[in-house]
Each structure stands twice: as C-alpha cells, then as structure tokens.
Image 1 (cartoon, rainbow over the protein chains, first blue to last red):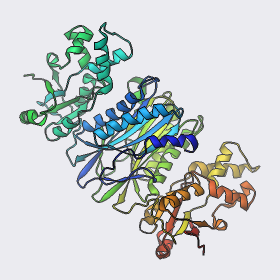
Image 2 (image 1 turned 120 degrees about the horizontal axis):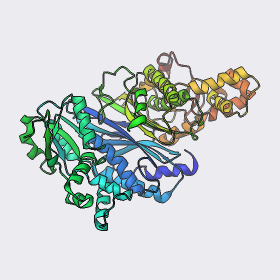
Image 3 (image 1 turned 90 degrees about the vertical axis):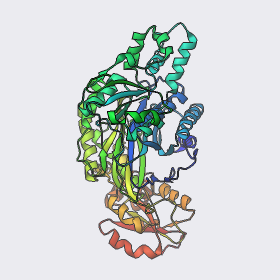
Length: 299
Length: 299
C-alpha cells in the first residue's frame, strides 16, 4: 500500500521480541519459520467482520482480544502450543487512536502467550480481520474431535454461561437491575481467555477435545458425531457462577445458559477411565468438572 | 455459521486429494500438517477487497486466480515449494453460481501447484478474501531480499508490462483500436501465473529474489534497500512483448510499462558472478534476461 495507508504498518511492525524459531518476520515476500524436528503444526483461521461478529462501534481492544483469543482457543483445543500469527486486516480509514488501541491489546495477548506476529496484509476496505494462528504439537499428540470412545468420561474446564450473560448486557437484552453485576459479566465476556495450560496438559490424557465456541450442546455434539459415540449428560453437574444464577434469576435458567453459551474458550474433553486418576495432577491449576459419560452410564 | 450460510462450506470441503504431509484437514478445531524434518516454512498472507483490488462485478474465477496466484508468487520469490493454504472469506450473500465459479478456479490453480486447502472461515460480510499460503524450503535456502551484494547481476524472468496493459483494457483506459490485441492482453493480465519452477531452481544460484507485484522499479528497490547496494539498469535490455509495443505504440512507452507494471508474477533476482554460468541449465524452461548489475558496471 502506498501513501497514508502504509502508515498503518507501523502499528504492527517489530513490536515484539523475535521467537527463536522465527527465521524471518515481516519485511520480505514471506515470513520464514523453523519448526522443531518431530513437531506437527496446528493451523486455525478465523474471520471477524464488523456488524456480524462485533458492533461497529466496539472497543478496538475488545475486537483484537476476541480475534486472537478465539484463534488461540482453537489451537489449545488441539493440544497445540501457540507460536505464530499472520493478520489480514481491512480498515475503512486510517484511524490512529483505533489502531493504537487495537494493536496494543493484540500484542498484550500475543506476548502473554508467546505468539509472534510474523506478517500479514493491511488494506483499505470494510472493517474485517482474518487471523491465521499456528501452534506446535508433538507428532501424533494432537487432540482431535474424533478420538472419544464408549465409556469415556466427559469434562469441561471452568464455569459456563457467563459469556452469554455478558453478551446479553452488551446487547442490552435481559439486563439485571444490578449494574455492578451487569458490568462484571460484560467484563468476563470481553476478557475470556483460552485454557492454554490445560490444553497442553491434556495431550496425553484426553481422548478428544474441543473448545466451547458455539455452546456446549453444539460443540460436544461435534465430538460425539465425529467419534460416533453417544453421551449422557448430568445437567445437575454443569458448572456455573453464582453471578450467573443471580443474573438469570435461578439455577434452571443458569443451566440453560451453561448448555448454550458460546465464545467461552472453556474446553470440553473426554477422558478414558484409565486416565481419570491423572487429571487432578495434570490440571492442578485449572478448575474442571465431570459432566457425563459416553455412552451414558453416569456414575 | 448456521443455516443457509453453512452451505457455502460445501464448495470448499474435501474437493482435493490429501497431501501426504496433511495429517488433518478441514473438520476439526485446526488443521494439522507435518513438515518434513529440516524444512523451514515460508508463510504469506494477502487480503483482496472488492472495490480496492478488483471490480465488484469481476469474474469470480479471475478473483480466485488472482488471490491464490499472488500468494503463490510470494512463496516462489522465497524459493519455497507451495504446500498449504487457509482461506478467510466474507460474502454479502449466498450466491451459488458465484461460489461455483470461484471455487472451481481456486481448486484448478491449487491442484496445478499441489497446494491443499487445509481450512478457513466463511462469514457473511462485504466481499473480502484473505489467504494464508505456506510452502516448504530447505533450512537456510530461502531467497531473501537482503542477500544481494555489490557486483551481482540483476535478472528478470519472462516479459514485463503486459499485466499493466491488460489492466488498461479492464479499466477501459488507453485501449488500442485492435480488439483482438486488447483481449489478448486482458487475458494475460487475468491468467498471469507464478514462476514456481524458476523459484525452486534459483535456490542455490540467486543471492536475492522478489516477485514483481508492485512494478520492477519499486520491487528491485526493495532488494537494493534491504541489501544496501546500488544498481545500474540497462533499460534497453528490458524484456517486453511485441503485443505490448503495438498496444502502447512504441518501444519507449513499452519500456515505461515494463518498469512500472505490477501483478506480473515474474521474478527479479540477483546472481553473483560465480553462479552466472549455472543459470542456463537451471532455468532451461524459463525465459530470463540480464537487465543490469549492482553496483552498476553494466557489461
């Protein structure tokens, strides 16, 4: 890009320390990376469009966080360690304060997870962001959706439903009278973070995994369909926050939110009976809950 | 995506044979690829936006070709062998005939170069296409922009300028009276293809390389700046077609087109004196021309 628009590049160029496996970052025809021998590479692409995935006047820091976090969450659900990201971004105009906020939030999250921006393309156009994120996973260790077997136990990390409640607040739908509660749930929506440590720890334990981006029912359904197994959920075991119960007005409504809330970045995964004992140690810093079993014998 | 929009996926899902190094393609949280040991990976991202990079009513086959060819050209300019592509695409509506033409042209070019579509994201939004293409290059063999040295000879592949003439025809600017000539140049613009074989053959011969996407002057400028060397071009040696001379009405105008025409997908590269003798054999199927020398002693 020539002229004013090329200024945009300065918000994204050379803002990070170079990873050891990045041979060449921005500034040539391509980036060059050097994956370690024996590593497989996990690759995820997400596109966010203004008006479809976020409101046109959304805080650019929230947009950046969402764009990167959702992609990292996909890596994590495969047991991959985040490494590199490429960005295609279209902007209707050169807007310095927007770019400053967007890129700051982007690099904050990228640095936190040790991800390096290795290149991309900046163009003039309707606000659209496409990220391709790549991560490393030892050969044969990727957590797929198709590995669950009959008898495996079904788990989720964290608590479910807050993201949907937060979205209600953003969309000014079903808002509670408690302003502090509203803003806390909105904050949780915007600041939800991927379960990176849990994803890595589950590599040798879980038989399948997925991140909860469309809602538990839908995402667990992907595992069951791809693994060709059934499941019986123990809805009474679904984990959710006290704040969610207060927001929706009761336990049953909270369960409904927990079943359908998307963009949680929590993991849903299955574990064979033989590996259950390892979970407590492997996920020592991550809350998790057993919510059912395939094909359906709930303990 | 739910509903009608998920139908779009059928135009892109499982249309190709799987490469041996693709462990998992579409249908999970991520794709998984297995680069061969000792390989580095070259990664390029390009975004095309309707109205900025192509006309809103452009033939979708031409859009697909351009999106993929320009990215492949970036890989080739690094000496990388094309391997995998991820696509983020936004479309304002579900349009079966548009998708049919777009995806057919996309897979035709991808299959030709042995590239597999490994995933992506389809959303509703203004027409925007972001591709991230990846290729393999042996460790330490990538052709960068910063390797040129004083005394190296400067070369280009093919003939330059036709792409700019073709764009003139598309934009109905400076059109010649010869309709057959017009349509031939327009065809060359749309069907320009990357110099894949030449890029691979130059790995052990060239000291630097770039693809001519912004025009020779601009792109050679990138090499000179990054390599910190000068250059003296022999404009009389610039290669261009007889059709271009007829279109622009003379040799001098054709030289101007050759110097500034972008989206050519021809390569500009530098070769040390010691390697010049290997060029004839290495590029036996690719036309190439010596157009100058750095720091300027033209033979």
